[in-house]
Amino acid sequence: MKKYQILAILLSGMLLSMLCNSYAAAAPRHIEFTSSGFALQLPKRWVRIPQKVFKKKMNKLNKVYSGEESAARLKYDYAVQIKSKKWFQYPYMLISVWDNKRVDEKDIPEMNKKFKDNILSSNKIITDTRTVQTNYDPLNYLYTGEFRFDLAQKHPMVLLCAVRYMNEGILKLSAYMPPEMYSKYAPDIREAMQNIRLSPENKYRPGYEEGIKFKEHILPYLKVMIATGILLLLTLLYIWKRWTNNRR
Image (cartoon, rainbow, N blue to C red; front, side, top):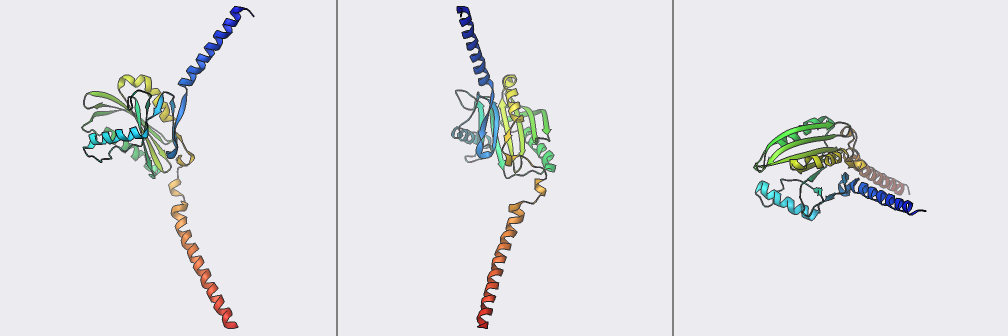
């Protein structure tokens, strides 16, 4: 084999390896939130913020928003961000999980309105909030929105949000970034919001609220029936024993 052929093979191998590594670095993967039953599809450069760091940041923000030491106004459970030397560098996404909050299908439009109204309400930190666009996907029970606001009256910000209705809960995602980061990171965030992976028990089941729920509708009566049956059986046994004793 000639030298130029060997060189061509080596260069081809190096190029293929570089392409594979580049694809692997950019390919989306899932950040798992197993205990809450969902996962987010995000590129490798996105990481989960450690819970210890997250809770410390939330405590600090709560004090800023409310002025109370033990306030819990910001009800978030997790956070993810672009990998950086510092935590809570933009863009980052705050995640709320509302357990045991079943929203009936007929009430979802009203709940969407409440979410929007809540975002548009201003306070001493967030001002001049306005809507860019909102959308509701009834097939996936997913409400999404893009909003703009000013932080501390001088820093323009973008908020991309998503509300995914679960069978007995609500998953809410809120991603924040300055406008100059929008074109670079918004596509990944939008794709993650559109491709939330839910565990089977978390997937919304329409008409579920109208069906019979074993724990709520059957189990209490079943316990009473079993107890009554046991009592009746003991009574019959007692009567039968007395009757047999009297015949002797």
